[in-house]
Image (cartoon, rainbow, N blue to C red; front, side, top):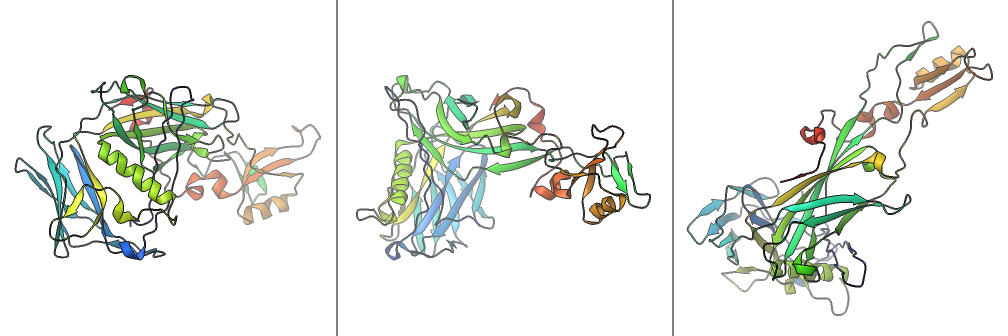
Amino acid sequence: MRKMKKTLYTVLCLMVGVFPLSGCVEEYEADISSEDSNLLVVEGTICSSKLNKFYLSRAQALNSYTPHMVLGAVVTVLGTDGSEYRAQTNGDYYACWIDRLSPDVEYYLHIETDGEVYESEPQKPLRTEKIADVRGEQLTPESTIDVFITPDDPFERDLANYYSWTYDETWEVRPECRTVMYFDTEYKTPVYEDIYHFPMRGWLDATSSTIMVGASTNYDRQHIQGLKLYEISRNDSRIFYRYSGLVHQRAISKAEYEYELARRQAGSEMGGLFTPQPSALPTNIRCLTSRKHVIGFVGCSLNTSEYRFFLNGNEYSSRRPSGAGPCMWIDDPSMDECCQMVYRGLFLCEWDSPERSVDGKLHTAWAFIHQLDIRYKYDNVYLEEPDFWSLKENVSY
C-alpha cells in the first residue's frame, strides 16, 4: 500500500554562474499534526497516452503510521470540451487510461467522496521536451558515479522552464562463484561435469522513491544542461556489470514547482516554531461544497519524455567480486572431510590436485548455494533477458 503520510520528496537545488553546478538532494518524512488530520490528500497527474493513477488518502495525526486510504470515491478527469474519463479503483489507487489530450482544452480532476465534491484547477496540458542526454561520470577512481541529465532545447527560450523527474532502474547480477564440477560422496572423488546448471546472470528492477524537480531560471537561454539527478556508489552491485536507467521527464507549471518546494521545506522543518502546517501548503485543489482544506497538487501534461541509458561497469572504477575470490579454500582435506563439506551444504568449485600444485598439496575451493545461484541471493531476480538489454546505444523516447 502506498504510504501517503510518510513519503520521500526530493528537490534539486540548482546553482550556476560562478559556482559549480550541484544537485542538492534532500529527503524527508512529513508528520501531520492533529489539526490537519483527516484532510483529503491527493496525488496524481493528468497525462496523455498513459494510465493515469490518482492516490487518495486522509492525513493522519502526528505519530500515526497507518495511512487511511480513501475508498469508494468517484474520481473523474474532465475537460472543458465535455470529455470525460472515469477512473476505476484498483486497490490503493484510482486509474483511467487517456489516449490523447488536446493542447487547446483545459482539464481538471473531479472527486466525490464522503458527501463532498473536490476539483482541481482547470489547466491546459504542458508540452514536454525530449531528453537530449543522460550520462554517468566518475571524477576520480574513488568517487561515486554521478548521473547527469540535459533536456532538449526548450520550447520557450524566453520563459522559465520547470520539470519533474523520476526514474526506473535495471541492472545485471552474476553469482559470486562458478562451478562446473561436483564432489561424488559415494566414490569420494571430484567429477568434472556441470550437473547443476546454475544461471550465469540475472536482472533486478527498482523504481526511484523520490520526485526530483528543477528550474531553468539560472541557466543560459533557459536551457538546463548537465544537471545531476542521482549517484551510485562504486561499491554498489548495480554498477558491477551493466546498468540501465529509464528517466521520465515531465514539464510542470511554476505553481506545481513551488508546491514541491513548499512541501520539501515543510518536511525539512517539521516541528519548528515557524513551520507551516500541511493545510497551508499551496494547492490547486479546492472543495466545492465546504471550506475544507485539501493537500496535494494535480498537474497536467501533454506528454512525458523518456530516455534509456546504459552504464557499463568495466568503464568505471567499481569494486566488484572477481572469479572464485569469495569461495572458501580448504587446503589438503581428506576425502572424508570433503564429504563433510557436501553434507554441510557446500559445493565444490576448484580442485587443485597435488600433482599440479606448487607445494604438492591438495587445494580445494567450496561455496554455498547463495554464492552460486543468484536466485538464492536476490529477491525478485529474474532470468529472462529484458527486451532492451540488447541495445548498444542510449535511446530517447
